[in-house]
Amino acid sequence: DVVMTQSPLSLSVTLGQPASISCRSSQSLVHSDGNTYLNWFHQRPGQSPRRLIYKVSNRDSGVPDRFSGSGSGTDFTLKISRVEAEDVGVYYCMQGTHWPTWTFGQGTKVEI
Amino acid sequence: EVQLVESGGGLVQPGGSLRLSCAASGFTFSSHAMNWVRQAPGKGPEWVSIISGSGGSTFYADSVKGRFTISRDNSKDTLYLQMNSLRAEDTAVYYCAKTGSGSPDYWGQGTLVTVSS
Image 1 (cartoon, rainbow over the protein chains, first blue to last red):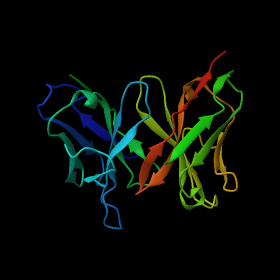
Image 2 (image 1 turned 90 degrees about the vertical axis):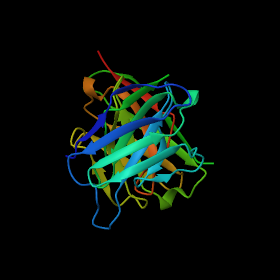
Image 3 (image 1 turned 90 degrees about the horizontal axis):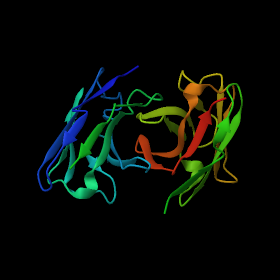
Image 4 (image 1 turned 180 degrees about the horizontal axis):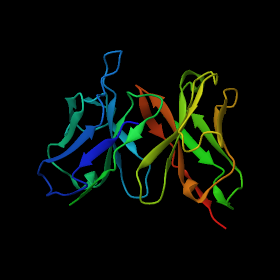
């Protein structure tokens, strides 16, 4: 199975400052169809996960443009340009390339 | 607006069975593969199972293969998960999730399954 490794596991940020989370996969996430199915999710306490980014860098509808995704192959990054209070919670990367077994990272807890 | 509402969770003894349901609305249910994803207390999400839009193809995580069965009723816009031979390690919040652009784009609020004597 593909293993997804996130770093850091915990991140203390200052309001208005940038933040960055790294995600590394044990195998390349480039699919035979040419796409790279790397996704990012945000989960607030007591809520369901919400997808923020799909296929490395595409923001979902309603996701603020302060969130951006980048990377290729096995190394990926989620960046928040200016952290806001509502951004606290846990962020997960998830690979969908090696279908049908989707695998998630361990999560990165972001607090202010 | 996409809505996914799970039900059927609860407390069950080890070795017991439970059937989860997920009522979908706000999209063409039969056009989308659907999933069950679970999250044990304090842990990250774990994909459990997926079913194609027609219901003709199903896949399972190794941890539940042979014990869980995913199914759907497109006439009722409802997804199911039949869980048999439940173990303590199956304790989790179970989410149903719609597939979009190759990953779960919408999730329900989840239903808690607790396996304990």
